[in-house]
Length: 129
Image (tube, helix red, strand yellow):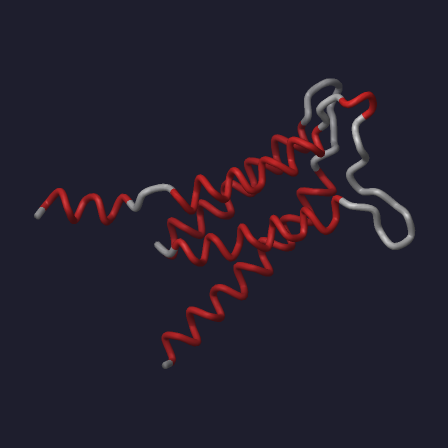
């Protein structure tokens, strides 16, 4: 029973951590240094490191998925128009691709790849037997 509570707590903390990083990435992805999208690069590397690190440390897909779900949900929530009419991720001009569009699609793709990646520990166990 205690192990179940520990696992639920880990999922909750991962969900919150993903949510916090989703907000930070959504706000920071727009930073440009000249023509280089530094904010987008840092945000994508950060979410990859966070979700991938949780998957490696815990060995649990569900913990990584909870983190990714928190990031995806907050990205979607903060990408839209706010109650006061403000927009954190503005729509691109003349239907071009912006860093906001890339960030919005990069988060679920990164989460899907990290969570869906085969477990190397399970492959080693099968190979040694």
